[in-house]
Image (cartoon, rainbow, N blue to C red; front, side, top):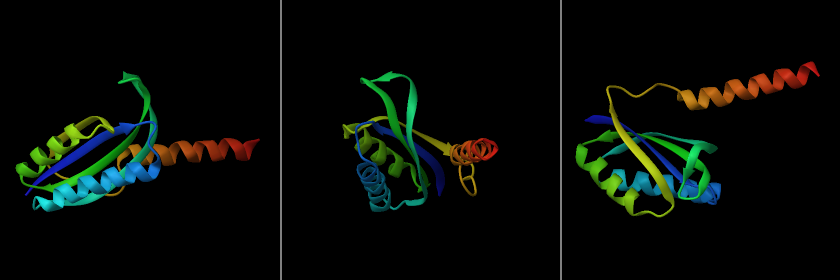
Length: 121
């Protein structure tokens, strides 16, 4: 089976529960097409480098997918139709990263620095 990473950006005005529902919907699409989602990460609301459809921020979500190419084709087709998703990208990888992704490790590192700074004050 081929391995893929699928990242999508959801509109900034969605609640976290709506973003989780979008991730669950993507998981259902993958599983309905004989694929498997091995990991789902929500990176949170982040600022964009430039405006996309009048949005300055977006909710970022990562899905690690195992499955045939037809899974990706259907997932991208459904994502393209969804008005809550402003951008998406799917790439094929040789292997999935173990543990938290780089974005999650960055969040942990930043929060640790913030705590250390507060402890000094």
